[in-house]
Length: 332
Image: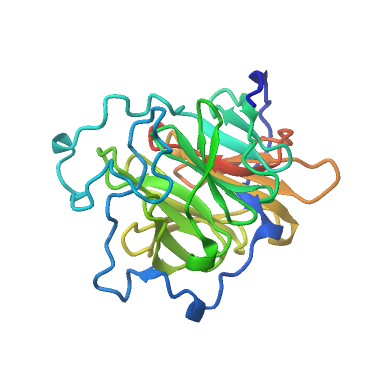
């Protein structure tokens, strides 16, 4: 049931970090030999770079959940994502059902909120009622058609209508993919296009997750657990809070290789981090991090393009495990 919105004014403070799930929830994926359903883009010449079946960009509406069985008629698998965007105009209702702000999900209360990086205000949208037996929310990604994908700690994925907060379980099956717990984020295929894909990262790999078929296409290895975010400029970023030092890295969307790395100084010790989340907005990155301790809640850190990091909110009163931002969000 949806609850009335409320505004919480948040004050600006010291220096920063971020988290999209509980570190207690992190686990290595199953042995490589068990992951027989993965499509490996590094070794399989027939593995597609992406078949265009992702739900992102369908435009919203009351029928957005009708194809939960894996069929997605909205896009042509044969379309070339690198074609001229002017030849592939966005739907008329593109981005109408999705805020340009950052969506947050609280692990303990399952409250969905909006965070405004400019004003530091949080607006509560309501409480999710997806499932009482699949654990708690653990990660979230937001598509530009008004749907949030929320992974629960059982590794079941739900689609959440951002207008009504209605939930529907998706066909993703971790017993088939053997991918384990993952963070996720959407990125457009290139700057100027509305078409986007969903990327996921577990404790050792980054991959694409097709929201039409729910198949995982493995791209490359990662040094440790990562959370992902993407932009309308076609950028894909990973936050590596368990590295020493913690780091932000830009990833190649086709190969998964690291293009650039920004080390983050003055960051909490990996052993002290309880939950973390990550989102790109307005040319900066926002890290949501909670450390262990009585009375602790999520701190918010802002990382600018030059790599400088500032804690802008201390103890925001939420235990944020998912920070989802759509590719409708500003990039500067």
